[in-house]
Length: 202
Image (spheres, helix red, strand yellow):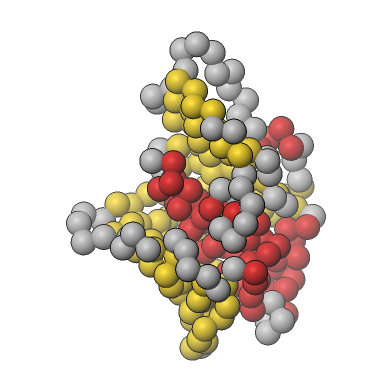
């Protein structure tokens, strides 16, 4: 379960930040992603997953601030303060906690790293109009990625083929920037008492 959840949040992030690879080519994207250094950025999106069977669909809200984030939707509340990740299932009263990892696929546990270091992980393979195909620099969870931008330079959609055969699609509906919050906003406010099942992998 943990691995699949991390794939989900990583795809949401990658959809959002793929344009950083194109910053030198597009001044509009340079200005857009420059907001990350000063703001809390909120992204609302619809996503789907398919692998030959029934298509799974959902909605998610992502908030990112520097190397911290939180995601609401998909059945889980996910928090990361840049050092630890909490995956909270309030219905089942279960929480999984894991440290953010380093290395070539560190973005799997902290996708916020993609905001500042995406070019360490992916290259732009082809460009066709406003559609860009990304290629991972090393073998990993993502085999291929394709993102499309609006005429204004905002992300419209993304499609990602994973090594397990799943194909993730995401469509962005809204993006806003607001003042930054205290780091505690990226940690669960819930007190995990004895009624909770807590799996701490740190």
